[in-house]
Image (tube, rainbow, N blue to C red; front, side):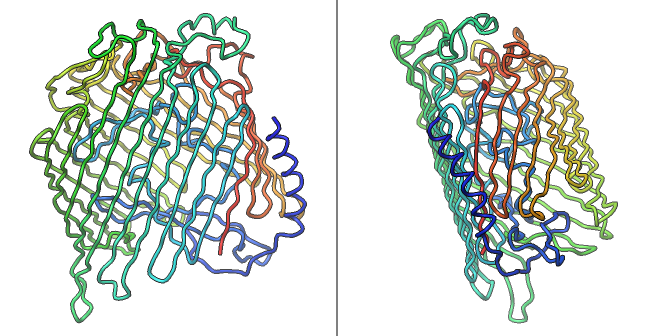
Length: 633
């Protein structure tokens, strides 16, 4: 509370100081993004307080032309400081930010190659596909800090600098939260550094990046007496008994990438394509540790110890790929009526796993193309085939087409088909733990996704159909099993960011049906964020008042096993049919934004059945204040 009061006093002091003392920078010109609105001053020139900064992500091996997006400079989503709060992410979680989570909307995507385990932290653990390349004139910095009651901290920092032919970037995100229930504390950190350089002749260039993820999570296994909580019998939240009062997980990953390319250009400056070599080193170690545990929470087997548990998954992989393309790794698609982009190559991956034990080599042949016709139609396709060892005969294939109705409003109709024939994560085939152990050979998983969509500006309506065959999941005993030979999921998705002057209303909705009890999804899952922005002092001060609503219909949501770091199938307990409402107030003075957020304001008012995952209550009522500051040179 003392820190909160100090921050509020500082906020009250900074607002008038910033209004009086913050000077306007010199006007700078920048390339406008066609579909993004920047702040405009009274002279109809772009405001120097919000320079256009664009970013794109680089594929580590499966190279494709980049798509650039503008950095969000609006107020609308500032208060959604945590990725799980953002409207595009509708997740079930185990009651905390930074803890295990998975998306409520069913989807499936897999890159070719070996996969030991898919960890349930996609919004907090970065991979090379998340590393951003920023297109800036000189530099851009963004700092953000959030303090929550009780004892929650969130800090993020981004800096990118361009100097001559070199561009460097640094991103960091750190979380700390004591939790609400017994043994629920989390400490997470993700850091990545990136550098790109191209010599003046443009013949040679390279990209290097490094990612470090570290998570230390207390895993209490959920409440051991749900009825006690539903009836609100305890005096305080930490008084409710949990399955594990001492269990915790440590997860550390290292991911380094070095990508170099040579552009083939003759003396007449004719271009004959680009040869790209990528080298990647990945290392992962997970530990689950528990002492003095309740044995009824685990399987009644003891393979190593009866008084403690220490289960580990550990491996590293070395990946090399070589390919030719008729575009550079950082190229964007040209604005032409006709073009043809193609790439193809080979990838080798060496894997050395300590626990569970595995040593193998996988080779993958791959190719992709992008064709534009008549300036209005884009056709894309990709294919990869793996051979040797665990991933022998794996296939990834996709084809898509979209038709441009109107360029000015980014108006498109499109359709795509994706097919995956792959081996399941290796831990489903072999695993050694204190309470679980197996060695099984599974058939290939087959997943077909057929989709069609309409999009205009940032609005999107899409229909997806999934056909899943031989899918491997965990059951309620934390043992892998093969789902029905054929399962179907049908999905309708609407995303609409409505803007009418100062009023905004963002809505993200999924309507889904699954034919399989092994692939449970809610019939409806949605997020909605209405808000209004007020202008004061001739636009120098802006204030936004809004709410965020999340809701999903009741369904048999997957349970969670903290030992395996995996969600499992259960068909005994329904969760959902509960509205989560957050309220927020945001102030912006030029490049500085302050916000206050009251989370889960309906906690206890409409009952205590607020679970997103069985046995794990959602976060209780909470309050957060934060600051976000952008710097442009």
